[in-house]
Length: 140
Image (cartoon, rainbow, N blue to C red; front, side, top):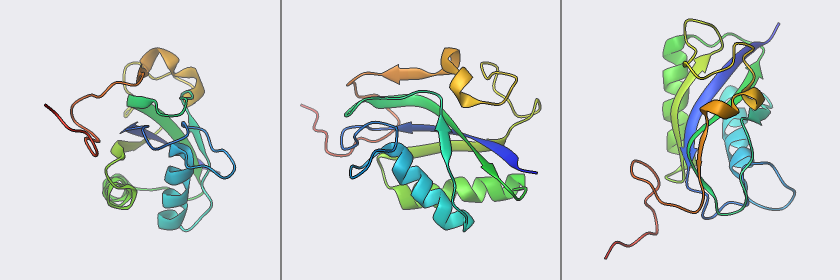
């Protein structure tokens, strides 16, 4: 039996070729899968709530992954902390939580699958927003 977990995140897409994994280019999904796989010592595949194009930022984005072992809540906090350290300033992990009624945000679908969560996502196209990823930006 696998356990499903949601990741609430944001990213600055300036140096990425979108969300979805693509051969030979840097993507948000690719970076996050690599980091998660390293920390959890198991190949992790993510499913995102949508896709973004090259250079597009996401202020609020959800992804989910399945893991064979249960990860306790205190361990999920540590996992988010470790991922934020590994991923740098371009990707911010806000929270990792198990799928279940107790933990689900209001806009999440009851089935626990991020691909049906589109009403709850907020994508900002080629805009900068406060709170994340102000790397390589100058204000005048």
